[in-house]
Image (cartoon, rainbow, N blue to C red):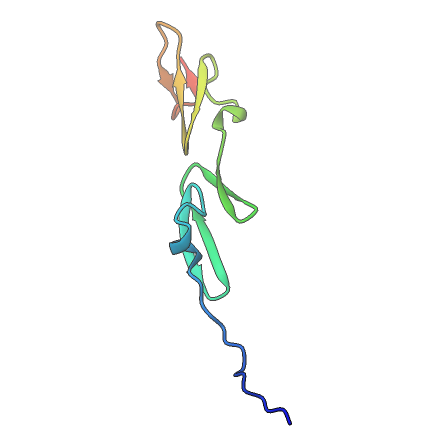
Length: 92
């Protein structure tokens, strides 16, 4: 004779944000009932559920100068005698 001694499977909540604090990369991890959600910081975009840095230098920033991509931002380096203008988008 056999008797059922196992209880029904139970849902165990796992907080992925606490287990892997860097899970979202450049964003904030929000724990949800069925996993997690990433809220991206400025200068980052969500790809495949994670936050990745936007390479502003690929978007024709720093016209007349040299663009340096930084995590979540960028820096424009202008030639001598020129200054960064237009929210860092060009040298004048």
